[in-house]
Length: 153
Image (cartoon, rainbow, N blue to C red):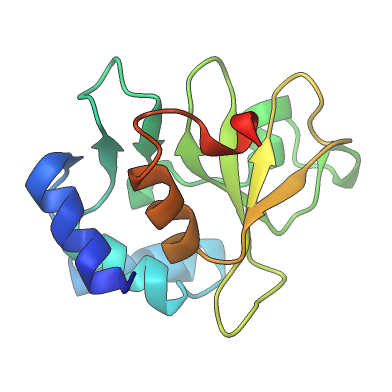
């Protein structure tokens, strides 16, 4: 499914935040030192974060607003040190119970960043790829009936 269709679905049946401005996107990119890929840029210009299926605080899927995206090792382990995970892993979705989906900004597949599972009990030793892009992840999440789709695989 194309990113535009996924964004229409989020607006129709889920809980999007107001869009980020171009200035907010530029400020975020300057702060973190990497550029949003086309999927993420489209999402954040459509809505600066969202919850899927249910509103906060009961949402399993909470796509973070730009202001809450941080280096994963700082959020999950409280240290900005290489022993606590790659410097290129950033939080993108909060899944409750201190679990996150991360974006790996050091790798790209067809110009898109892959998304990773970061289970708090095993992070950073066990991190696995969930999707090759945000749009792939979003499509699978939206068709999951509010289940964490990778846990049933």
